[in-house]
Structure formats: structure tokens, C-alpha cells
Amino acid sequence: MTGSIYVLAAVAANFLLVVAGFIEFAHGEVVVLAMYLAWMALGLSGGSLLVGLPLAIIAAIALTLILEPLTRRLRQNRAAIECLILTVAFGLILTEVMSHFFNHGMPVRFTGAMRGGGLSLNFGLISISAANIYVVLGCLLVLFLFTSFLYRTKQGKAMRAVAMNMETARILGLPVARATVLSFVITGLLAGVTAILFAMALGFASAPLGGVLSFKMLAVMLFAGLGHLAGAVVCGLLLGVIESLTTGYFIGAWTDAVSLGIVMFTIMLRPKGLFGSRA
Amino acid sequence: MLSAYAQGFLVTVGVLIILGWALYLPLRAGQMNNAPICFMAISGYLVAYTTRDLHWPIPLAFAAAVAVCLGLAYLLAYTLVNLSGFAMSVATIALIFILQTIIRNLTFLGGASGFGFYPEMPHLLLVTCAFILLAGVFIHRLSTSRLGRAIEAMDYDPEVASALGVNTRQVNFFLTIFTAGLGAVAGVLFAFNTGTLFPEMFSFNFLLYGFTMIIVGGRSTMWGVILFAPILWGIPEFAPAAVGQWRNIMFGGIIVALLVLRPQGVIHKDLLRRLAGSRG
Image (cartoon, rainbow over all chains, first blue to last red; front, side):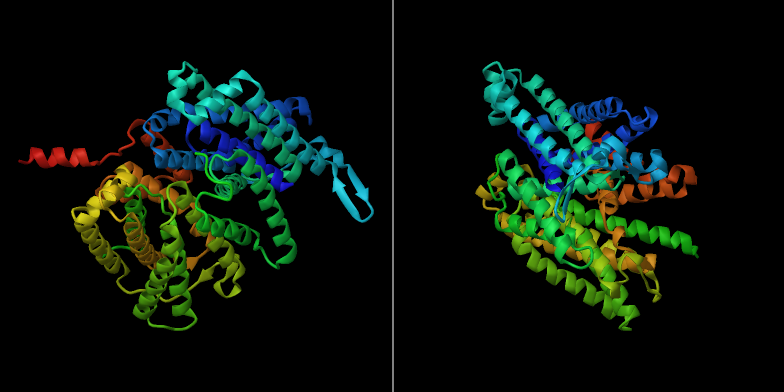
């Protein structure tokens, strides 16, 4: 289930990397801030999903779009390290905003409809909550729609062309600037959906969660290979499975050390990732 | 005679200058290597444990902590030199997470409750100034040396640098070990200044402080870190508490603003050349 979240985050960040040419380290913080805003909207509207869910998506798109003008000059100058530092700083600002302005810095909880209404499916001794099922199905649906957009629409084709070679796409008359801005919008949209599914999966949100998600997202990207969308799907699920197994078999809180250790070991043996880099 | 608070402030600024240089040097070669923060944690905890629980004399504990970090960096460098760009920055951030998890699970290091230790280093401020002077002279000589020019060439284009005969693997190897040493020294000084260590201390906050000083000061020279470390650390420290609690937002905002408006920072090579030229 957490693997599905990693998949969505890594696919979104990979997509932005191949089209716009930089890694959005603040993606996790954008997701979590969208969760906080959804929580606030749900609280003010009496738990109405019709208010909370769209607000999460709109907030995530807006926060991601802020980065477009901020990073434009750095992207044009191919200042990759500076872009990474800028998004790290942006993410830290978002984390501090969540710590200072929401619920006195305490974690926020999601209940009711955001958690699948508390329903579950029972198969003998195994119980699967409705929220978990919604998360997995939601992830599959989003990936299907995203893939359809990329491969069956004109805009998707244009974005793939820009991702392959921006200069050639520009020479051929493709709207490179519009494709880049649209890539930010789509990444924000994916972040908003991730926020909704993450809220369903975890049932709570806290300020430090953003940094952890951003980092795990980057780890999945490198594990798979930068820019490799299909690889991100496989490796995101794999990381989720590794974490679950570690939690089950190791005493103490070793999840991060083991899962990140495996990722680091893989990166050191294969610097371009398991499936090869496409960026 | 300085008060204990003033001494503590100055030592913290000194630690940030050394850490800033440790992060600045790989950045000069176009790499974002965050491993010095890991070595800060390792040396800090090592010196705290050896002085408090094993009763080692401070100079021995200091030397042992730095030596262990240099040894670990030597092993780490064999794998890190093959990584470039994002892979190196993510791998070294992963190390920070992994190290925090390990420390949290080691009860003899205090775990998440922290490790408090009581030995005090005499003349801590003098020792800090001495290390800043040593490191500063070395880095200044390095920047005007052949190796320094090789590092600069790698920043412009690693492939062209390699084609021109720069052994990029060797340069990365040297930088990994040297910056680990700087990080280790910073960690020991930080431990003695703070007196209690928590795993969360060695995290994104230090990355934020270090990179703020580099970005504001200018990433193409070493002088910016010296000039801006006391200013950037001092503002939230001496400002009213209502302002000080926004330290991280201030630093993040400064980084974003500088990178958008003036990515070369306040002090950069062109400015230094103009100043040198105007003096004849």
C-alpha cells in the first residue's frame, strides 16, 4: 500500500524530470501540505469530500506551479545542483509552514469517509480495510489515465517529444514552453491525488512526513533509474514490500536503514539504477 | 573575557564555517556531497562516548574520532566516486537517514533520548579558531593550485575536464576524504560545545544552514562562508524569540530568493577580480 504511494510520487517526479529537466525534491512536502489543506477543508465543511478532495488537488497544483517561474532561469542555464538546492529549501519552508500554522504543529487525523468509512473485507483471519483497497485501485486508475494521456493524446505526444529532445521539438514547432508548464500542472495533479490516497492509507499527516516521502521518492527514482517511468512503478512497489518485510522481521525501528541501505547498495553497484537512466 | 554564551555562539559559528567549507568543496567540483554531515555525527558520538564512558583523554579521543571518520571515508569513497550529480546527493542523504536510524537503535549511545556527556574541552574557542585557520589556509592554497583548477574544470564540464587529462575519480576520492575530515573536526567541536547529542541534530537542518551560507556567500569562493556564517546565525540568535523561531523559514526563503535573483551569491570570482584590479 505504501508502495503505491511511492509509485505515484516517483512517477510524478520522473515525469517532471524528463519534460522540465529537474528533480522536484519538494514533491513530498507538497503532497503533505495538500493533505493538511484537505484536512482543514474537511473540518470546515463538516467532512464533505466534495470540498476536501478538490481543494487538495488545487492546492497541490498551485504549489507545484509556484516552482515553475522560480526555477525557470536555473533550468535554462542547466544549473541542476542549484535547482535541487532550491527545491530542498522550498520543501523545508513548506515543512516549517505546516509545523507553525496547522494544528499547533501536531499531526492531523483523517476519519470517516477519508478512511473508507471504516469498512473492511474479511477473508478468514485476513482483514483488508476498504481504505487500503481504495488506495491500490486509485493508484492503478491514476497510472492508467496518466499512461493514456501520455500515449493517446496530442498533448501527451508533444510532451514525450519534448522529453526526448527539447531543442528538436522546439525546431519542429512544438510548444515547448506550454508543454513544460503543463508538466508542472500534471505533476501537481498527481501530487494532489497522492495526497488523497496517502490520507486514506495512513489516516494522519504530520509535518516531517513530507521530507521522508520526498526522500523515499528520490530513492525509488534512483533505484529504478532517473526518468524511467515503468521502472519507478516496479521499484516503488518493491520498496513498499521491503519496508513491510523489515517491519515484520526486525525488532526495533530499522525500516528506513534496511530499505534505504538496499537502495544505496544498488545505486553504488549500478549508478544508473536497475532499469537504466532516461534523463 | 567572553561570557559562556558568547563563546558558545562563536564556536557554533566556527563549526558552521568548517561544515560550510566541507559542503562547499564538492560543490566547486559540481557535486552535492552531503556525507560531511554523517561524519559530523559519527565523530561527535565517538568523541562523546570515548571521553565519557571509556575515560579517554580528550586529545586522544579527538584524534581517534577523526581517524575513524577518515578510514570510513576512504572505504566510502570507492563507491561514491562512481556516482555523479543526483545519485551522489541522494546516496549521501540516504547515509544521513541510515545513520540516524542506527543511532536511534543503539541504546549505549542514548538512542532517541540523547547522549549527554560532561567532559569539557579547555580553550574550545581557541581550538576552533586554530582549525578554521588551518582549514582556511589549506583551502585557499588548494584553490590556487593545479588541483584547484582541476576541481573548477570539473564544475564547468566533467567530460571536457576528463578529456583534458583531469583524473576525475582521483579528485572525487580526495574531496570525499578531505571533506570527511572537515566534517569530523566539526562534529567533535560541535559535541563539546553542545554537551548533549541527539540523532535529529544531524539532519536536514545542518544541510540547510550549510547551503544557505554557501549560496548567500557565493559558491565560487570560500570567503562567503566566513562572512555570512556569523551574520546568518546571529540574526535569529540575537533577534527576539518571536523572530528566532522562524529561523528555518528565513534560511529557506533566503536560499530561494538568492537562487532566483542572484544565483552566483554575494561574493563571486568576478567581484574578487574587480576588487583586486581596482587596487592596482
